[in-house]
Length: 151
Image (tube, rainbow, N blue to C red; front, side, top):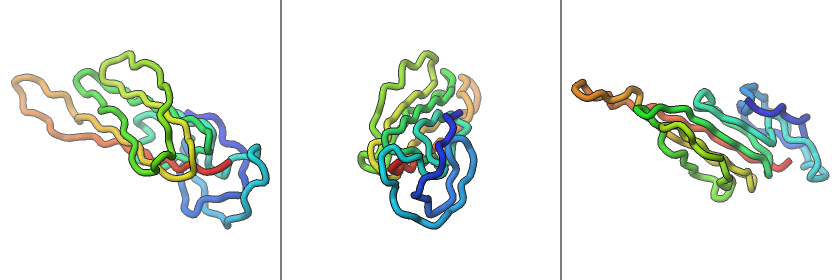
């Protein structure tokens, strides 16, 4: 779940995206940038996003200064790998996500520091390996693209 997105601002995406809340936004004509830093977020963008495994494959839009937290619930037998960030060179900065309490979970948090795009990724086995049985080698991949824009 996420905080509600702010009212639309002058900047618009060039391709349809899915906001952290799951709603789509259609492309619209670009306009001039907002006049002040207190302007509302661009359409489909938010200042805060909470992600889970169900958000895999989505594109999330944050405004600069926004906060993203993700929780991937795993198990001791099927743990998530630590979340990695690729691309974007400085778009997201790691933040304190708290403490992982349950074995197998992956917890991460980021602050959006500059406009751009980054990709978050993690993975885990599709099934637990039990001694004395055939091994399951399937891997579940989780990725989210994070687009950061100016407010």
